[in-house]
Image (cartoon, rainbow, N blue to C red):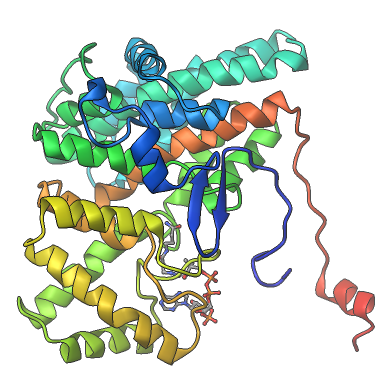
Length: 399
Ligand code: AMX
């Protein structure tokens, strides 16, 4: 376990969600289909959950009323403004700087606004840490869509200024408007997207990193920026970009209509060249990710005849048997990232290098809800024990 990425070691308490290897994620005890049923929707009229309601659930453990979810919308709309230095910094980044680097740097720079850091410097009592962490969390989550929109607009919309926050719109609808999209079905997709990418218990790279850095009492902005740097890795959040790149290569090589045999060949070539099949496998899950399934259901409802959706469905039929035959991956089934790109492409958000930023905006909900609890519980600085190989050999009497 020590040489294997600590897989299976139980070493963290995370209150917000628990991941069952077979069933998938439960947010405060509720599965994704249950969340889709019980969480408030937009103005009570939409179908997909409001991320605002999910955040309430993650923090309090209770399902919010519509009015409570709407009150979070108002809070976030009121807190969305960015300091000028962050806007200037974003506007000065070169266009070849990856969107995730821009996102991470902007979050780090937002710590000029940290109420926690200020209170700490003024000697606040540790019992009150959680209150300032809560304030920073609310501020940060409110600001992230604007940060993400500036990055998108600078890179792909000739620097268009994001639309002003509209108090009659929810967090997601404002984001979608800021990046110049209007389709109500796309807004619904993004509500679902921001809900399901939010949290995946405590041990994944972005959540664990945020918790670890936060345990040094780094302020919430610095802690989450560290988590975002982890999310930017191809084995974690960047897999959503990798999947689309891989599928695009597949289309370029094989053309439109692809036979199962051609697909098998392509997948074996990927494996034989020492690469992973992106979007498949998981460190904890052992069945198809319910986050994949709910996106597939969204696609079946809204875009059943989309060629890319059909291709992704065909890949789903072929990949697991190949990974089983290869005999290495413990989980041959798709994860969340195998499906998100196809939906974004359908609604014309085609810039795949940007996809992990969307994941990051969502991941703030889970990471910040957990950090509030870390501080409320007064969890100490994280500092596990490590050994060197000679020490381990001695421990077990090996020569
Ligand atoms: N394609 C090819 N090989 C895979 C594989 C895949 N999708 N998934 C696992 N394997 C390989 C591993 O690389 C490893 O090979 P090695 O023995 O040569 O090092 C072997 O199978 C055993 O790995 P594992 O125990 O099943 O997985 P893990 O817990 O070490 O890693 C994960 C999990 C997700 C990193 C891995 O499955 C993977 O690389 N998947 C593809 C990338 C991906 O989709 N990442 C996104 C995950 C979800 C997320 O965080 N957003």
